[in-house]
Length: 151
Image 1: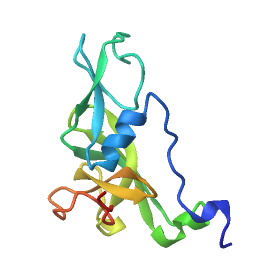
Image 2: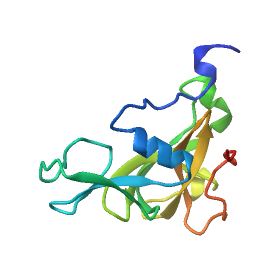
Image 3: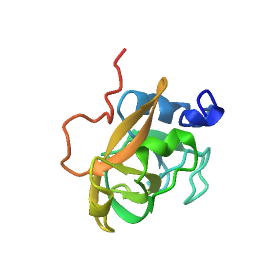
């Protein structure tokens, strides 16, 4: 149904904890938090280190490399917003720094995705934001899936 609230992909919630992450994504950069006390990297953003409980966490740029740990192929859209993407892959990607991120695998046939596949981050524009997605490592030079407008 055109004009329905479900016709456009949802935007992630942005708050004080997550704003640096989403601002960096809009610039084509993937950030993680790193603990100054134990050195652990973490994702999703938190006020404290999930490994040691320290509040000494800060943002660092991730290298964007990862590996598919598990995935599923979606063949039936959950809403009209995703109908054009069917079939699409939702995967758990273990980042080179350690944390695991749920995302989509894009830019290759869904049948080509496999556990252990090397991937790298790209960014899908959504309104004024960009959402991290992953493509086969060594994919297109553009780090922005769909050509996020600069400005």
